[in-house]
Image (cartoon, protein in one colour):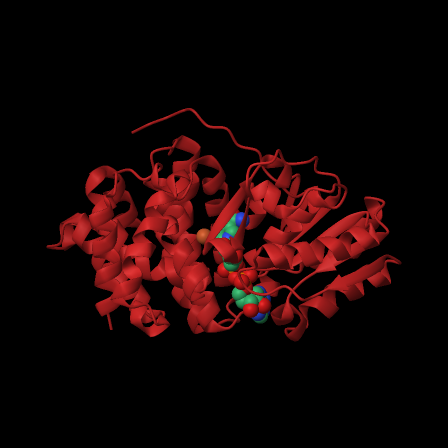
Length: 388
Ligand SMILES: NC(=O)c1ccc[n+]([C@@H]2O[C@H](COP(=O)([O-])OP(=O)(O)OC[C@H]3O[C@@H](n4cnc5c(N)ncnc54)[C@H](O)[C@@H]3O)[C@@H](O)[C@H]2O)c1
Ligand SMILES: [Fe+2]
């Protein structure tokens, strides 16, 4: 299925290179920025990345206000708190350093600092205010690809789900893709965030809104992840593997902007909000089972994804679909990813509300190549209750 139709806005400027982020002080000085609101979370503080980068800013004579109270998978109250601090400081640039949790808040600050609007209003559909503050995003996971999407995903605890603000005004002005900063990522988070990127790439590749640019980027990302995620997991200091993962995550983020994720992400959101299963972990455990439904819908694309994972029809007795399914299960196993929902205290009684929440997420579900019924969604959740 070929389609020349697409609509893509990207970050203002993206710089990819080993140690590229160390230029942040000089570059922001060149941009005339002197008052920075710098956000991160505890993991970034503890890894020393925060000090390393704020040191570069201060050395360039730039004033820095730091905020590091961002939790994983932040919710509306977390955004309200950080927005109040940022408004009080009135920076001329925001720098967000971290995984998707921090980057999504950085993107929201770029539109919230100069208005009275709240994040909940934006999540409920109030028009997004102007992008009024220069914003720098530096991903340290690989990852959400948030630096190249126009989405910010925020939990709404009262409603038991996550919602998205989707608008190109959220795109950053400057991005550094610096693999040195992902070296400190522990193996478990390397694995789950890498699987999130793989879900983005595979879901977007096999999606209703897929188009030719999406497909090029998605296949490239899938190939890079197939070749490098195990390496990055086994040896965090393999900078070449880390770099390929960061590029894959960035490309897969562009795919989110070009087409969109679908059933895996729709089914993972309630697992994140209600059971606090980290985003990448929830997606990873869903991917093989959801794909058993989706892959049937597009044999040519299934073949292409399988080839990224080494499928060679002349040297195997498996069909592309079976080969890929086996490979995805093997990947989860090699990355030591938990595959049972029971481990996260999900029980049979929880399934109806999970089904309802996933099914009602029409923004994502309507982009799934096949229309998953409530029964099919339920069968996937139920199967995962029983996995080891
Ligand atoms: N905007 C988008 O397009 C988009 C896409 C997918 C997911 N998301 C959202 O992103 C969030 C998840 O982001 P994530 O998976 O990147 O994880 P995360 O940002 O929650 O980070 C996970 C953990 O890793 C730590 N960490 C991050 N980088 C580190 C490093 N280099 N060294 C040591 N520790 C490090 C963090 O401190 C944190 O404890 C969710 O809220 C999800 O909904 C957004
Ligand atoms: Fe994701």
